[in-house]
Length: 160
Image 1 (cartoon, rainbow, N blue to C red):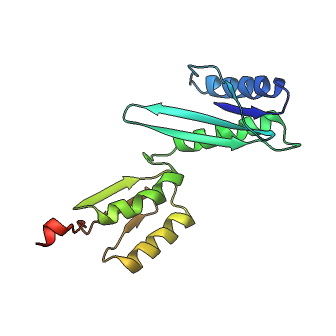
Image 2 (image 1 turned 135 degrees about the vertical axis):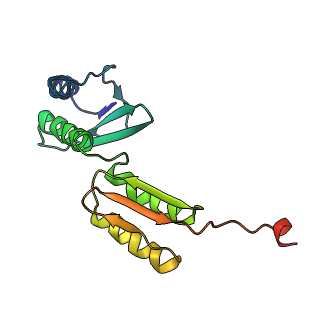
């Protein structure tokens, strides 16, 4: 998807052509044409959805005044290739959002992420201050593991 508002349409054409070239050179195919979407402001955003056997991943890049269309397209492709070249099944932006659910779940949870970020580590530190859990972080393979608390919600019926 390409969001473009108040800008010339040739920007979409240049971004799409650049993305198609980079992805096709790497052996990937884009199944659909990029389409402009309506927005109340002026600017553009690129969004690429990667579809995998057991899931999806999304990548985005923002345009800004003075930033060439090809540079915006390169930013998008870099994110996609960084994820593709990692062993992660979870991208670096989703990883920190899964932590609380893992900590509250019953039993062991583990995932491998694209990259262990400082934001992920901060979220781990905060969760460990509030819940009786300890996350194990393997910085070599980028895996995150924890044994959850098996948290359950107490309802009026379950308290009786």
